[in-house]
Amino acid sequence: MGFVHCNLRVLMAERGLNIQNVKDKTTLSRTTISNLYNNNGSGVQYDTLVQLCTLLKCTPGDILTFVDISLHFEDITTNSDVNTMISGHVLDSSDNSGYDFLSKITTALIIECKLFYEGNELHFKFKVDITADLDEEKHIDFDKITSKEFTSSLESLNAPLYVKDYINEKLDLFLFEWISDYVNSYEFEK
Image (cartoon, rainbow, N blue to C red; front, top):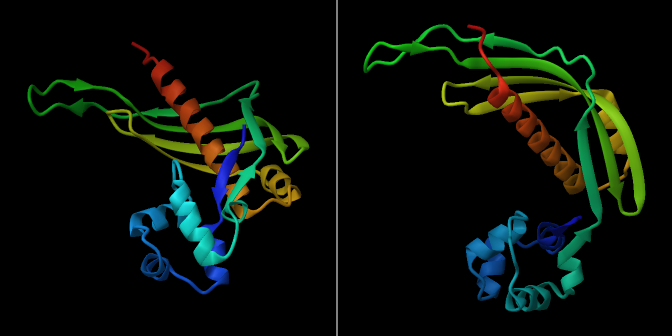
């Protein structure tokens, strides 16, 4: 599938410019420049590219880069030992009724990753330890620790940091969905 990465931060640094300098030398808003600088855009107007290319003396291809990447994670844990801790009796202040809710999950998953990046194919397995805290409204806050197989596989890509960040973001999304599915399917023993 891939994604588009904005290189404005690097181009500005190479030219000794900051966001205010670019704002002062163009008609672009600070928000537009900041969004591109932080790679947070959902679209770029042609006029924006024209102004940036003129100021930076570059081409649109210098500002925007297409990253050809496809990524798939799969939980292949055979004997998933998910340890859960159920919170105590929670009182509702309106009628003193209570209910149990899942408050913590700790687990270790084995994940298979299929990664296609810039024409190269990489398949590897790695372990990830997850600790997730949940509140009574099922809001999830989690931490992960990945094994060295994950780290060394990413290093073998020789990819820029923003590509590695993209892979980590996709892993976080995969784990968040796994936790959400687990929480939604969890049933208390009566």
